[in-house]
Image (cartoon, rainbow, N blue to C red):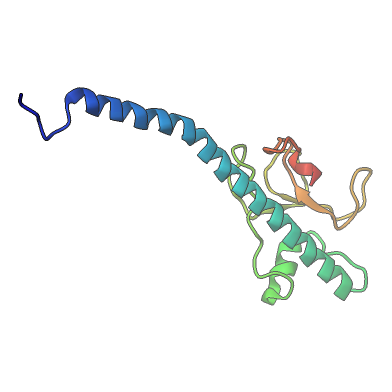
Length: 141
């Protein structure tokens, strides 16, 4: 009887089908892991910005930065070297902008210059009303 050293066409098709099946199962989990890493980075960036504002507040006799917060915090790298990236995947593109007039869903950092009914002066948060993978609305952090 003749035996071939090569794979048969059926064996190759089965191998391709198995690889495709494993890919289809693993791909969504991989994408979800990437999204979670972006979310963790954004939360850490928010923590860094809040620390920079707190240090500024402490060094300036209880006064928060004004509407020019980005310029004030990054000047000479005294409080923070650069404004970190805000990214709420998949709803908004990454940005380093800070808005003092939040719309509720711009995807930017939002900063409260003066006290209002809902927020206190000096408060910084993410201007996004979507939920993250943990089912928490972004502007609640």
